[in-house]
Image (cartoon, one colour):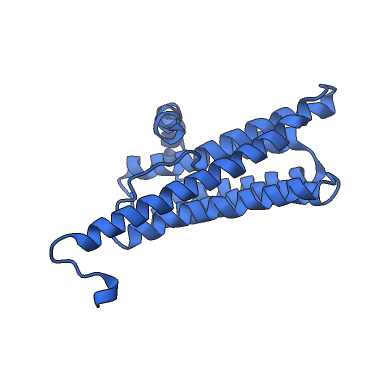
Length: 220
């Protein structure tokens, strides 16, 4: 849901900035690489040290590159399979850094092995959720389901909670509990989304195999 509405809003807002970068000779691929590098740095430098507020600020500034590079490509008329592949691949890198940074905190100074495991589950399930859609589409299925918690929801829930939890270091009491709650929400939501997509792919595959002129894999 956030992908549908928030992405359209921020695309309109960021269009002038994308046009400015184009005039400066910056390429969409360069924005993709810089944005990913910024997210990775923000996550792996700040989060393992428990600096959730500043880490979230840095990550949020760079995460908008995911919208800017596509906007630039459209303005240039250069939308391509390579650009889509690069963007999707580096999204996985950025997501891994965010949840990896949180896992490192809980494995170290955070001192909570359960939340470390939940963070790792969020990392892994996010990758698998994306893979199920990509793999389903690769075998010719539409995978016509969004799911409860997609990438946009995972990022918003996790980063908002992390940023607010970081205010604990500025003297706001009790607010650090928001991050563990958010991680559990993302973990459960990702599991539900994974099940939704697997069920959808199974149904669509069965329908495609049963269509006239189609042979099932077992008959081949």
